[in-house]
Image 1 (cartoon, rainbow, N blue to C red):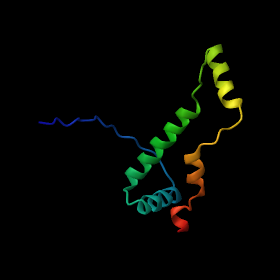
Image 2: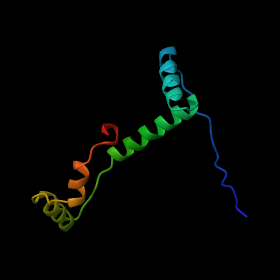
Image 3: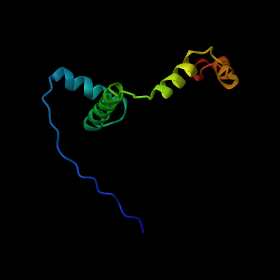
Length: 93
């Protein structure tokens, strides 16, 4: 027997111009989404990007030295990546 997880939701409202609503509706239609789904997806994605962009990474002195050693050396050839880059994109075939 599976138990459904019930998430609590709350309302979030904002004022938009007719032009903004029109743009949102067009994007939602293009993605076969409702206006609410489209706005929610875009807002969450933008919030996640903002959080990731604001992250600060702290390294120990040893960790920083390792990072610099790994990223400062000459690039190494990755055969699988070379092969992938030789392939045509799906839209080119």
